[in-house]
Length: 195
Ligand code: 5GP
Image (cartoon, rainbow, N blue to C red):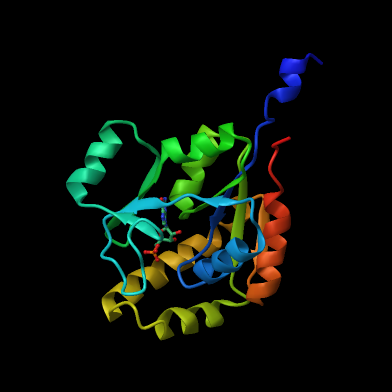
């Protein structure tokens, strides 16, 4: 191997985390951030209204539908999907930039997005975060208090579809305990390929 080959960072892994609304993706991701200094989380763009606890630029980039469409047309999004009436997408440049530097990247996206990533990047690792039971998921979704009843109904319908898609994923992590699920994910994410 030449000296130049040695200096070039090996490619890092892209991991997609999907799972039904209410399964606890945000809580697990918060713990992952605290436990792994390596991983970078992609910040999506969305047309959904901001929840009170969310910070623009940290949880999402909140944009208008016009701005979202402009990004789609410009080819700026790696994948995009409509979820419960709102648009969500992954900015391409940030993800590709991290991977090129050998840094593992985590995407928190829905099933439609996961399928697009699989098609565009066959090496990506697809992880499904599953609830301990359907009843537990319904309890969590109804009790969250961030959405109105119509939105909860749409999210529940969508959750049933998403549960059926779990078999398309490389790994299934059951969120029976946030701590345990986060540990399992940190080991799946791997460390960076930097030397
Ligand atoms: P929430 O509105 O609860 O933050 O997210 C709703 C759903 O959209 C979740 O399943 C979440 O994983 C998904 N989502 C968030 N960002 C993206 C994205 O960039 N692309 C896709 N396809 N789905 C996303």
